[in-house]
Image 1 (tube, rainbow, N blue to C red):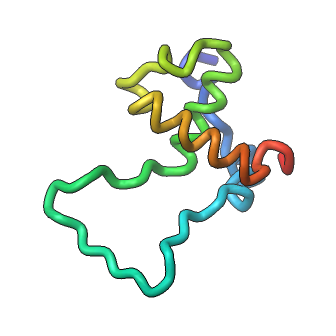
Image 2: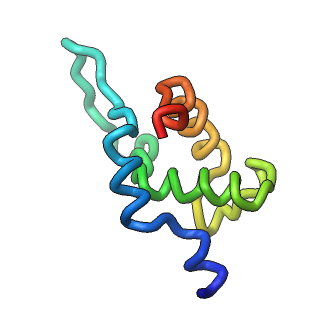
Length: 92
């Protein structure tokens, strides 16, 4: 098994995790109008989970997360904290 393949999340594991991931809800009664080029779209939850697993398996610091492979380390860390508060990891 290659090093990259061993660090990805299997489909079986993702099937267990996906229902636990909180959905970002927008406040009711509020309309949003996205300006062209304004802000970034949310990351795919599976991609975020793969980055979190990578950090936990390797023991690297969040800031050392490979940006080319996973995106912004601070964004991944924010997702991790939100999912931790939501009890995702305890439920797993």
